[in-house]
Length: 586
Image 1: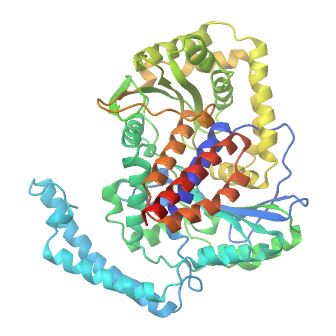
Image 2: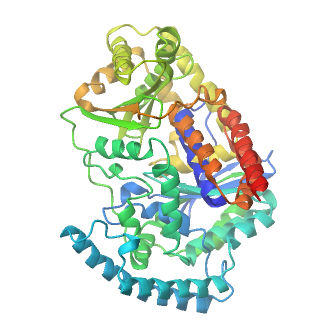
Image 3: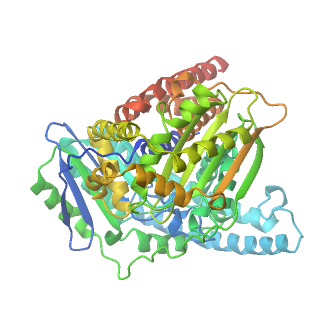
């Protein structure tokens, strides 16, 4: 596992936590200044003169929902490619670099032609796997050898990780990115006196990107997919559940993409995708920290103003989710604690009902929520339980999840969930309980907004989801939610025919894994993400990479929300233990 892969996993975990604890805003408005360049690129700026740093980033309004079969995962793939540099960063000889890329593409076109034949053979039953390494024809082996020679020539003139090094040498920290179903976000924190460096670096990689190691980077994405999905106890089943839940919507495929698509991306497809979705009119930048507004406007025009506008608007996501007419169920056996997820179709981001659903998740979720009190404390049938509304840009869902305790079965947890939902629908919701949820919302929002970094992430994500002003509107809309609103949405969406149920059973011969106490109280999906990280660290063989990851922990901890702080000692210990094991081996 490379240091870059580890950073991506941590970024994904932070995003999950942000989603789980997010959506909460204090009634105080965030003072955001906005301006737009002549090429259509938008800027959001929040001045925090008490800081010594500037957190800055930009969002491309594109995610896996904008893809299509054949190029699934390409949005996430671009997240990787955007760190490869430009005409001036990442190479010692740009002319030779570009010539090699052209030669590589000629070879890759021949390779794609062979894979086209192999897929046809697979269709006719003449081979079991079109991508099987053992049965590659000699012509394919020879083309791959020629391609590897070109790759080595390119690496001789590459300046490896120069983009990262330039920032690090200037005192920057936390450089990373993440891709979701709806957005791709890039971010970093720089010293206040290095803000011009950010404007130059980010505009340069947008103006003159060079997709170096385009095809070898697919191997990195395959490895990331293996770590996140194929090597985790429930990863492949979670992916299957997602595909089952979404019947027609592009949310049905994974953000990382299907493996067969990763094998056949072409550079021309990538350039077309880039020209469509990385044009300035489809980008928004945000900057939070200690800066002068006039200077920021001048720098934005000087650097990002160089980007040329696109002649066409990116196409909308037009495929809507079909109404579900029957309950769906998935039954899986894995090396895991028996558990359940029960998920209902609901509404997208900023829909009028989303606020009541968020409040409902607050009633059910958390250590003081109904699910934990009922399933964990009173009935003692679950080791943990939670709920949450997932309002994505184009559609949404509401999930309830729990892990069994003792001899409890997933079916018993399902009955307990249904009983709690029945109580919500039919019985009065005490005003005191509702007010407690609203108090928790405003309290947590104050803590999150105190961090310039997490304020930056919220601005970028909300803008990518449709409107950054959600950050200033959510609180008022949420605090207006009544008990009747909560009951209304529960009755509207929580029907058996509108849900999918995933039942996970322990595979015969596997043993239970004890949940660390440090993870108690975190959402189940975050718990699993952290456990997967620890598992990946324990399997890593690159001691130098692990030491680099350990060095990154302080900056990651600094930018994490309070509820996530207790996780970092677990990660530190896992890294230290694995480093010690590798050193003892040596």
